[in-house]
Image (tube, rainbow, N blue to C red):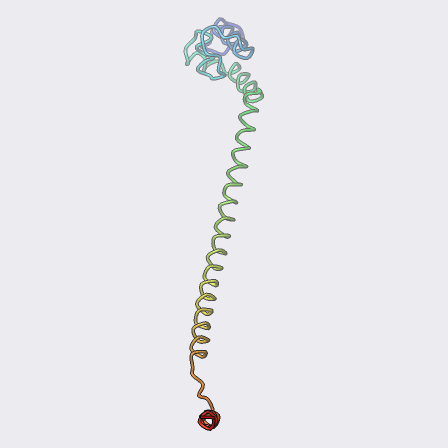
Length: 150
């Protein structure tokens, strides 16, 4: 065991983990599907999970590399885009609700105006239906003229 190798971790196990890490990072896995997961790391290395967990320096390097990988950056970009879209969706929902309130208020005003217009039309119809009596004097004179010609 070398001084750099933590207690309980053989130099062989650490070497196997570093070689597995390199294969996974370069896309040349032998024993796994190649996804950058810790489960794939210990399986690719042919060691147990407990052995991998004792390889602190290897795990620090793993985490550093994975957090800076293109896949990680892509995941971070996707997470940021999802957060942006969720904010936009929330804002759109609030705007839709505000507009719905405006439409409801406008519909109420329109209904009131229609009712008022209907009432005014009915009032106007009643006024025009009122019979205005003719001047009796004209009617009598017409009758007299009519009889005078007979």
